[in-house]
Amino acid sequence: APTPATTPAVRCEPEPGVAEITGEPWPQQRLRFERVWRLTRGEGVTVAVVDSGVDAAHPQLSGVVVRQEDLTGTDKRDCVGHGTAVAGIIAGRDLTSRGVPVMGVAPDATILSIKQTEGRSGDVSRLARGIRRAADLGADVINVSVQAQDHPALKSAVTYAQDKDAVIVAAAGNVKQDDGAVAAAYPAEYPGVIAVGSASPDGAKSEFSNGVTRISVTAPGAGITSAWTGGGYRTGLDGTSFAAPFVSGVVALVRARHPELDHWQIKRRLERTAEGGGAAGTGAGLVNPLLAVTSVIPVTEDKAAAPPIVLARAPVPDARKQAIAVAIAAGAVGTTTLVVFVALMLPRARRRGWRAGNARGTAPGTAPGTP
Image (cartoon, rainbow, N blue to C red; front, side, top):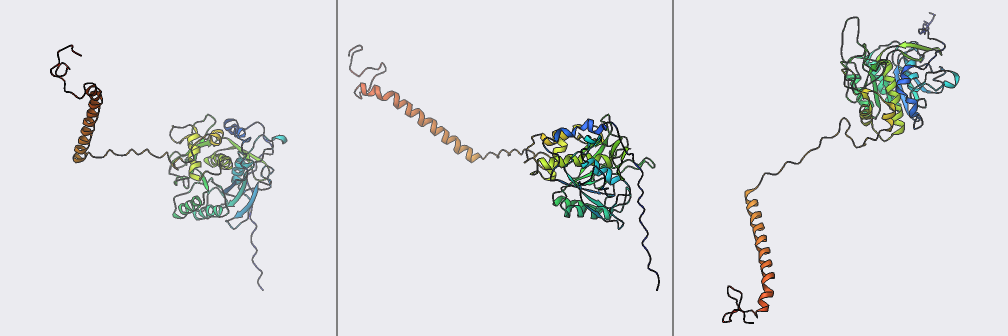
């Protein structure tokens, strides 16, 4: 009998990270998201990472990853490191007591790992399947640190997830320096998606951040430090891929604190509370975790923008109605005048015994001065 073919072992050799890191990363110094932790740490919120998988055994992600699924037909391991870094930014545990200075934005949130690629790019239809699967599994937030082209399946998946009230946060994409091609990134470009651009330590838009995509907000995306496959860490990470999870973490904080808000209202809240916007490619500006959680914004505010105030149009005058109104007004004035006249003259007539008076106010046939 022929010998059954053996399935070749999948090579899982991510680029090595570093065992230890020192110094607080600049995104934490800039965003200061730990100030929000007295109000919320993202408890009860599930964030789906549709990426290259997640190393659930990493010390900062131990107990954080509640489920792992693989759509690539390989295995659930993160053999790239990309998805693990994204998950660490979103919900890495606070291990400062062990001397680890880096931490996630929402350390009490949970991670749902949907592996849809073995690299940093993959099949768009599989990406769409990953978004749908995340929505079916009840993800409150879906992080997509992937830039793809517009595709009907991808757009349908985004709509499907939004109909389930999932907040989709997507990277705005990076400018390709090799050929200079600049095009909008998807799913970031779709309506309702929070499109995230990259900010550098000085707060300005990173040079590589794609400004063609319609940016909602920016977040740190240059010189990033995060967890890495194999239990270590990686420094110097650049890309909107690493800016998006900072925003996903903030969304987790907002969803935990304001569960009554839908995905449109959360998007609007982040845009309303961002700071320093206005420059090309920065959208509303740098995301502000404290303001996003604590600002008082009417929940009845329109999904995309404040509803316009509609003033009623003045009715066209009707000539017949105007004439009737004038006649009624004139009659009312005449009646009022008559009532006043009677009220003044009636007492005097009674004093004269109802006799008519002359021009000087005396009764006929009576000499002036006669009582």
